[in-house]
View 1 (cartoon, rainbow, N blue to C red):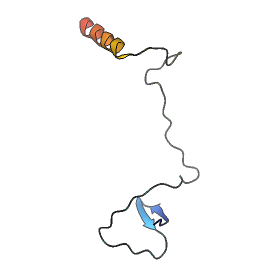
View 2 (view 1 turned 135 degrees about the horizontal axis):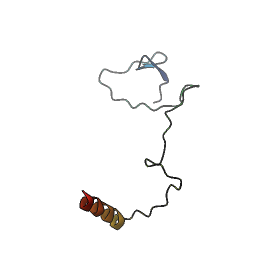
View 3 (view 1 turned 90 degrees about the vertical axis):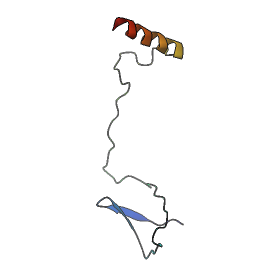
Length: 73
């Protein structure tokens, strides 16, 4: 069953004459974002670089980096 609705003051308000039993489990999916709403921009990579993605980070290389940091501290 699909029941349309909208968010008002942070609460989902169902449209139309809908009666659900108390305690009924529901799932909410977002059909579309309201126009004019933009998500927060995410900046990747976390460590800025002029050449992102140039490190070959295998498990072995990560272990080496962690060992080097342990020695220097």
